[in-house]
Amino acid sequence: MAIYDVVALGSILLVIYIVIDVIKNRTKNLLRRIIFYSFIFYLLNVIQLTTGGIVLPPQKDVDPRIQVVPLHFVGDLYGMYHNNGLDWFFWNSVKLSVYNLIMLMPLGIYLSVLFRLKRFSKSFFVVLMVSLTIEISQLIFGFLGFIRGRTFNVDDLILNTLGGLLGFVVVELIKRIIIFAKNKKDQGVGA
Image (cartoon, rainbow, N blue to C red; front, side, top):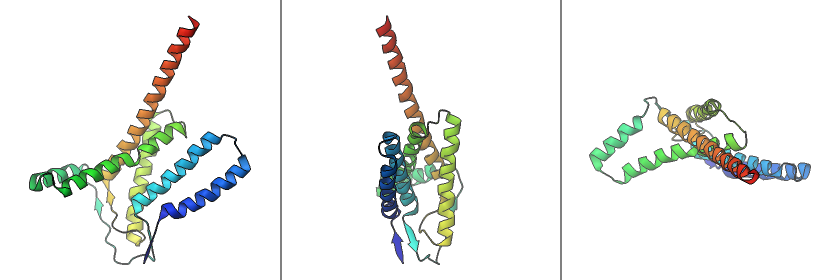
């Protein structure tokens, strides 16, 4: 059994793509293309984080689990705190919840900056679908034995979606502040 690193393999392909793209397009839309390259690298990291790597050959002893109770992690955290206080297991669970929250924050940023989405509803739909795709992929690939120890978890879906939306909202607010400041400065110059 071997576990293959998605980031390492994907990065090799990404570098080949970047070289070909730079030769073909030179400096045309260079900043936008660099942001796009970083987006692909980000996606490779999300795949690695959510799969733990691809297992080849597929394992036969799989037991995929599904957790469909919303906010179940809150009860888990309370139970851990109540039974053991602020021990390592409690803080590890908090850390994993925070990681799930921040994992798709960059996606929200890319939706605003790279894909130029303006509407909250569209970004919500995209982030939700990406998060749902991650969870369903973990279930299917786990069932088929290509990844190990991953489950479908509705709490991950909720936290990932909230994080992606938070990233989108923060960038949109920053953009509006910049536009407001620019307009205010332009009004002051013309007066």
